[in-house]
Length: 213
Image (cartoon, rainbow, N blue to C red; front, side):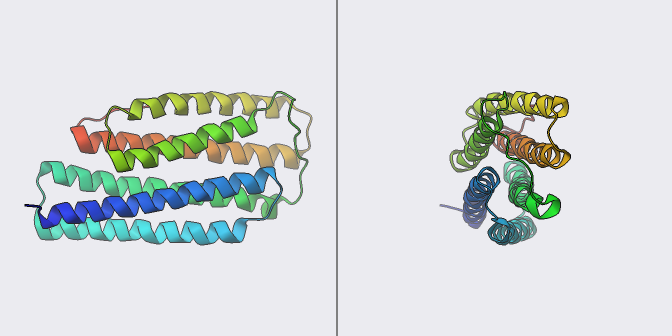
């Protein structure tokens, strides 16, 4: 017989997956806007606000379950992890919105063409994969699969450092350097939060803490 607490945990998990899927859309649109010089800020601000509201709903529901059902250690650990995951997904949406806001902050900058050693799109693809994998793990709760994400996140970090070094050594305009530096920094932070989510899932399942970074 299923407990009311089990139903509540399942509802929170579904909310988190809903948030995660919207975060995936947000990052996809943010990168499209950046690389194709499109203004997508209004849409991304709306999605970021929606993710924030869902994050607050997760926290409220988790707190209510703690107050009403006196969860045992394993359930309490899961609720704690879910609250943290909600925050991490909220950061996905915020950083995607921040990428889309760069143009209004800096104005026009030069587009860096392909073939000059930079790997901005490759970094974007790695981070998109990290984000998608973290949402998948929320659905499957597969404690062993998270280490694959750790490897992808490490590769994203390496691309971030490579691109950052090339920007610092370039003779591009200040606005161009700032625009690309901010964008890859936001991408690097999104990849970090994907690791945080995976670590939280692992903790919820096993009770043990692990660091993927």
